[in-house]
Every structure is written in C-alpha cells, then in structure tokens.
Image (cartoon, rainbow, N blue to C red; front, side, top):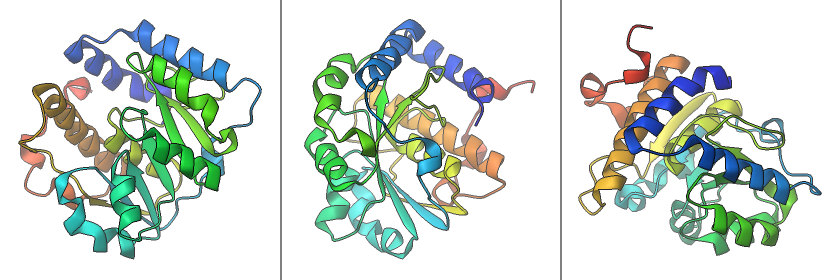
Length: 231
C-alpha cells in the first residue's frame, strides 16, 4: 500500500483518538536512529505466500488453532504468539508494539524469526529500552506515520490488523483469521474503539483484495469506512 492511500485512514484514526502525528513521527525517527548501524528486514525479505493465518490475541484463539495449523504461514499479534507456540504452532512473523511480551519478541529475533516492531507515539520508552536487545537482522521496523527508510508502513493500526496488512504486502494469496473477537467484553473502552477500527480496516483490506474474510461474515453491513466517504 502506498502511503498516499493509507494517509486518509490514518488521519481519521488520529482525529478519532486525538493522537498526535508528531508523536508518531518522533517514535518513527527514534526507531530509525536505533537501527542506524544495523541491517533490519525490509518488506521484500518476507515471503508470506499461500494461505496466511492472521492470528489475533482474542480469547477465541485457543479454539481456532486448527485454522492456524492448516495455513501455509502464520502471522501473529502480540501475545497470540505465546498461545500458538505453547500449542506447537510455528509462527512466521510476530507483529507487536512491544507493550506486552517483549521477551517473546527477543527470543524470536534471536532465533531468526521476523518480528515487526512498531513505533508509535505512546511507546517511545519501550523502543529505546527493548529494540537494542533484539537481533536487528530479524526486526522489521514499522510505523503508522509516513515511512522513512528503513522503517516501513504496510498499513494498519492495531497489532492484529497490521498483521493482516503485512501479510497482504508480503504476497499472501489468501487470508484466514483466528483469535479475533471484535466484541470482547473483557476489554476497556479504548481497546473496544481500537477493535472497531480493526474491523473497519479489515473491511477496507478485503475490498482492496477482492476477497471476503470469514471473520467479517454477518458484520459487513454495519461497518462504516468514514475516510472513503465521497471517494
């Protein structure tokens, strides 16, 4: 996805949450600085062809493991990686903003498994503390702001929907979803709004791909895409 295509959605997210674009750009620039003497991954280094399971960290993941097992590749958000690994399901890429299980991200990079480490305005200290402890050659640095080499922006906002956009950018032929719970009653109001945006962004992605994601069945008619109004 070109940044010009992503930017209207990004502006709508910033407006809805009151986030500061400059803060996201500062985090991006810090990630550039932290990797200045390293050779991190680029999007072209990841091959996610075939059927890709995009695994969220929702409570339904434990019951969806067979879907991940059958996929050609698995891209997992945050703590979903731990559930999958405990069940013996290999993960091909972890997507994280480093807020929950950084030790898992560190272990994966040490083993050479790609980790998409995301920079945004609220995780500057985590970036500063954790990224230098990772094996940089297995880190794919990402941003939701305008990309700046080597930091890329394949699209997406939450760990889960960024995993889907990443799979799309890296050649996925089909996307299947496990561990997605858009109406998780255990989350706080901010997380609930983020899940709403994840749903919107997945709907946009399936329209762009000409694909129908099973995770959105029964929900499409209620999904609005405000940044596309009038387009």
